Length: 219
Length: 219
Image 1: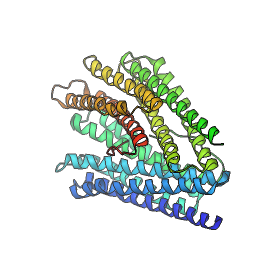
Image 2: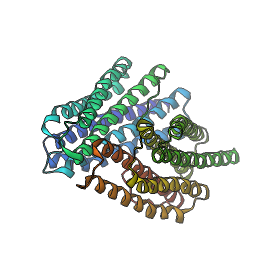
Image 3: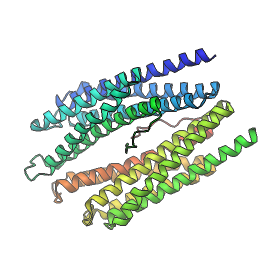
Image 4: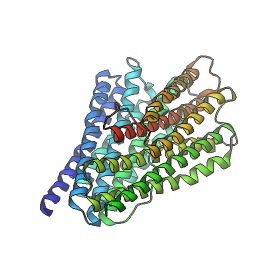
């Protein structure tokens, strides 16, 4: 019984890793939809978000069944609660990728991002995808050191977020209100995506060490 | 044992109702912070969000303990999973109220909302608060009919959201990029708040009838 139980926990962990990969792929394609005005990329992110949602539902059901059937002890319960919350957070990261893609689709055939700003958005998109892929490794290996490094990478996202905001507010801004609104949304979506990645990484640290890294805002 | 179990479920339900009231109060004060440039209102929303978060954590722990200790049958498990998700959604509604208040605080002593747009924002804020209060009743009485009416009220929020967007994109827009960015965020926060209210109402319908109202996007 207990052995089967640990096997099922392994299954849940593998599914969380799969989720990080799907989320990373989604945000990569979402960025492509923006930067290349690639309608097909946008559509594919939007269509495949349902897979991520279903995987989250499956993980939730598995965790709850395990909790209901196996009467876990405190440490085990913490792991399962952690998995529940991580899958919910990864689901929201997938939704944010979808929101980015929706802006790409909405602007098509135009580009949502003015040419001079493309490098910043590209860096944000690449960073977001990298963070999601790194989460996969962190979850798989319960790698606390790597989890702590995620914070540093998120600092760069915050910097890019601030810079873009300042660019839009500068008197030299010539791209109008509509582009500013789109970009402020895109800017926010990438920043939240990275914040969620940080919160998943912190949860791994908490799970592995019992230490809680200071709570951050996450929506 | 079973009797105690049902008592604990009642406690969880009462706490969810308390959460709806706290969230409704938060969004009311957040709107006030915007419309009256009321710094104190903004600060109080931001300071009290931690209470909402703690209540969500408490509900989560209670549900998980009940699941772990009582080996619930399928119908009971559905109720507890519902409570878990509702508390997570209400927590996010509280966060959205906090985001609105942050914009109010950031703009203080200026008004974030230009005078001619105040009536629209007031209507959005009032509607958001009303939806949250209604959720309290719906959860308390498991009122399916009322839950279904929430959808209709949300239609009005969507209309207000679209109108405000169109106003900002019209050539007559004279309030500049910064105000447009702030307003597009405020606009989004209220709209998401209402979407979350709809998703909680749908969950009540699902719980009470076993029927799932069509899934909506929710972030």
